[in-house]
Amino acid sequence: MSVAPHPKGGFLPLEDYGLIGNRHTAALVNSAGSIDWLCWPRFDSPSIFAGILDPDRGGDWIIRPTCTFTSRHRYLKDTNILQTIFECSPGKAALLDFMDMTWAEQDMEGGPPGKLIRIVRGLEGNVEMTSVCRPRPNYARDAPAITLNGNEADIGPFVITGPQGWLKDGSDMSLSQTFVVRPGEQFFFTLAGDRDKSPLASISAAMQSTLSYWRTWAGKCTYRGPYRDMVIRSALVLQLMTYAPSGAIVAAPTTSLPEEVGGERNWDYRFTWVRDGSLTLFALLLTGYHDFGESYAGWIYNTVNPDDVKILYPITPEGQTTEEILDHLSGYRNSRPVRIGNGAADQLQLDVIGEAMGAARFAWRAGLWKPPGEGRRIRMMLDWLIERRHEPDSGIWEVRGGLRHFVYGKAMIWYALDAAIEIFEGLNLKGDLERWREERDAIREEIMTRGWSTRLSAFKQSYEDDLLDAANLMLPIIGFIDGRDPRMLSTLDATMKDLVVDGLCYRYIDAPEGLRGKEATFILCTFWLVSALVLAGRTEEAREIYENLLSKASPLGLFAEEIDPVTGEQIGNFPQAFSHIGVIHAAVTLAYFAGVGNVDLEDWEAAARKHRARGQRSDQTREHVVRASK
Image (cartoon, rainbow, N blue to C red):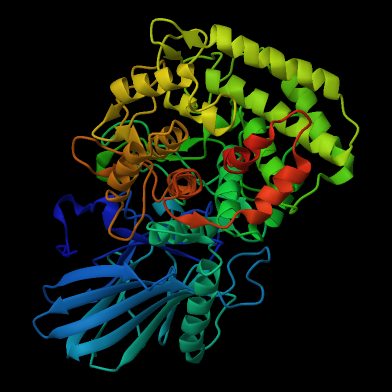
């Protein structure tokens, strides 16, 4: 991809950004060599660079040629190491951006051990390069305190290093240096906390160790098929967005990238949603990443109070979810307000227990997890859920237009009870199984009666609203209804007719959101559509939609939350865990049910047969292995 060094308006499309990180935090780097987003030392820490939200005030760190250039970037194969190639009339140079993944303390609390590393390599000719750093700490609310010390500069609690001395511009509080790189030469830059000042001589070794780390992770993938590269990229993204010390998973590493350009749908996603984390667990377990389950299960156990389940949590106990508006930042492409914190933390969303219990059942079936304490916390969560199951809630889409009885949320209560019954029967644990069965069956009957719309010939969004909702594509995926049941086929046809435009699926249309503006198509919903089509026996249609959506990924294989069906641009926080979960699950569904590719699930099938709930038909075993992944 070729870009102008200074794009019109100061904003680049989200598709131009790559993500690097160290499982403590992450940075967005564009193809013109600028880091435009970085929070340090954690995902949810205040930003030091936020140029993506305000090119003038937010701050950035640029490394690029001093002359006019074109550039393109790519990930080194099966890694999260980003390589940018600059070409200009004097020659060609490469920039490698990554975060060090080599320290023994990597998975410990206390901030990222190691550095953000930038390596400039000469390829052809003699290229004059410049590095300009404009730090703007605390979301650009604080003036940077800069102290020069040779080739180092202290920026408050941070230290930045380069191959030579920095020049400080007091007028705009920036740091810069200019140098010439020749073929075969390397120049190193680093950014770290001031406690980590290990010598530059270790950088080449850090590069090799980090390369090995990511390729070892990628190599665990058991999916084989035509979409393997995208599946591995999605697995790498999900691992990158996991906070190593606790096992928490951020929904996205950014805040306030808008769902509608110029609109108010701008949210902070640097938190762990129980739903997102549980679905991430499914996706990674499905593709062979068995070691992921233990860390996430530990986070759930240590974080979630079974007497008062929240929908989202900060990644550490001291993290804050209180919503706050940053009026001094213009927002991406002038989309205001810019928010930090997320008020949805206080919403009631009854479906989250279903996703968590589905993850628990799937991990248990695979022999990777057993409920601690004889299942006491599960019993407590189910008591909490049953007590509230007749209440309206805010739903999976976190609408702010009033509480409702959402069909998807009710179905996920059914799913939670169904999973718990199977686990408790399989392990012979004490629980109120008779009550759980009665509640499960009553919920199903209620959904079939109150959740069906004769006018739509489809399951509707809520008992109150005669509207379609793409979340109901999940009903066959969780095993609530067979994918070929006439009611599900009719729901699928109605969804295709009214919610799908050019192969892209909206969550809903004209729902009571309580917000101004309009939705774009939702990437995860389109992947759900693929899986639902496969379960309906419509494989070719599913594959066509899947491949069409994959073609809309960024050049680096990344997805935001939504795609504008008119312009084709990605919008929303970037990259989005939800979207990359969908990449994996749809690929596995195509492989498992339609033979498009192959995934090794023999161990899972054996476990499912062994632990199958009493009365379940044997011919359902195969389907439940993958259907349990939602």
